[in-house]
Every structure is written in structure tokens, then in C-alpha cells.
Image (cartoon, rainbow, N blue to C red; front, side, top):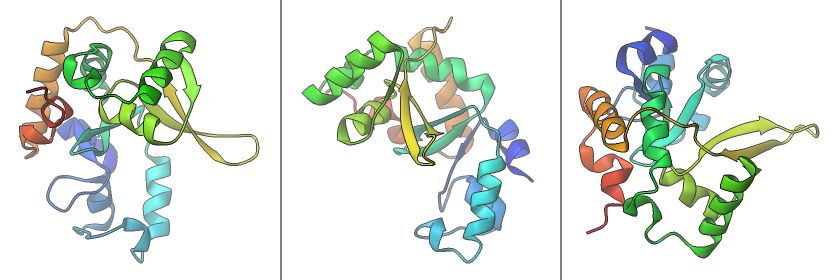
Length: 179
């Protein structure tokens, strides 16, 4: 199975995981402990990941990089735009300011703790871009509008996630739940 057919089959695919379907596991045929960068086939893994044409990656399952099939992208957008208590409660002032900038400008280059907070709570769509100087830069974008309700989006994501063995407590709305 290649990466595209795995994502088509599962809907969600982790970058790396010892138990769940992952891109690194599919490429190597192994369950890797530790960083894949230290694997003897790291260069091959990197090349195949670079060639993997996925529109959306988010820190969805247990805060890990997760590839999302296009059929689930409206679900992620609906959840991301919701601004529910689990997303907003406890955000640092810096993260709130950064989110306001993303809302105002639509797209913002950012790194650091505030950027990470927004990504972990699905409040922004984050991706890497190459700059003219050759560096990689993280760009945070506002989610597009979705016709789905946040509840419907969560349900669709939960269905795909549990089908691959994800425990519901590993999804962000449960990890950051307001109690």
C-alpha cells in the first residue's frame, strides 16, 4: 500500500506512530520508535513525504502530525472555526493576540509557543512554506467556512479516527475538554 491509497482508505494517517497507521510505517514497513530522522532510510522517508501531495496536515491525534483526506477537510474546518470552550479556555494572551492577527489578516507567519497553542486546539490551519532565502516558515491561516456544524465535523472525525484504532481521549476536543 502506498501513502495515497492508505490515506484514501483510512481518511486519517499519522506521520509517525508505533501502533496506528502511519506514513513512516507504510514507507519503511516498520514500527519505528524514536525519531524517523535517525532511521537508516531517513532520506528516502523525507523524499516520499515531500512527494506526498496532501492538502491538509494538522496536529489532530494525540497532538501528532496527522494527514487528513480531502473528504474530512470540511469536518476539520468546522471544528477549527467553532471557537468552543475547549479551544479558547486557557489560551495564553500571546496566543489570543496571534489568533486575532490571523482573523484580521487571514494569514500570518509565526513560530513559538503561541503558534503551537493555536495549532494544538485546531484554531488555525498551519503549513510550511519555503522563503526566498531558502528557509522554512510556518504560516498560520484562518479556516475556510464549512457547511457542517462543529458537532457534525467532530462526529465524522471521530468515526474515521476510531476506525483506525484511535481512542477518543486522544482527540483535541477531549484532550482540552473544559470540566
